[in-house]
Length: 187
Image: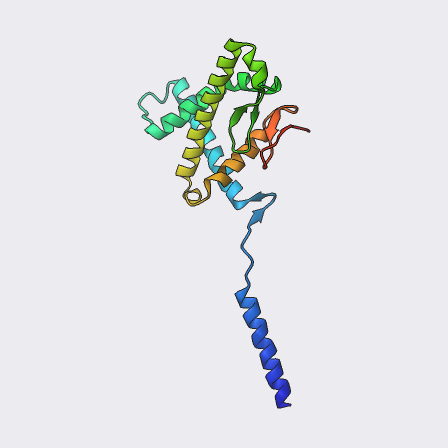
């Protein structure tokens, strides 16, 4: 009887040690998005709403006395330029000259087509540069505004933006998968 108590005690103790020492990493998934995705996209949506409200207020004439912080003005200017360039970006994606890379930025994919037309090459180079500068400003602001993102790995945040930008790209345009291979976006 004493042996059973000792064996049972050892088994319980071993079970407690094993269950206490091995703890799987915490992965919080809400719906299909991770907590990091929710943080990034939520902050991004707030910035979009904020810039829309500032732009509407200023265009209606009710925001004449309102001053913007340099950071907010930088983001507003970036969003304006993105809106201005949006049609050209979509046209160049549809023409398969540029694509969405796996870090959230545009990239020239077909240099050969562009080398034939130096004006178009210059136009596309400027377009891609401007769009990537604007995206960089927005990513920096998203990280700056959200305390929870300041300790996150920047590559993970950029991957979320890459996925968002790739989802918004037209079918048949170039996107770069997570290992760096360029593929045409399917439905």
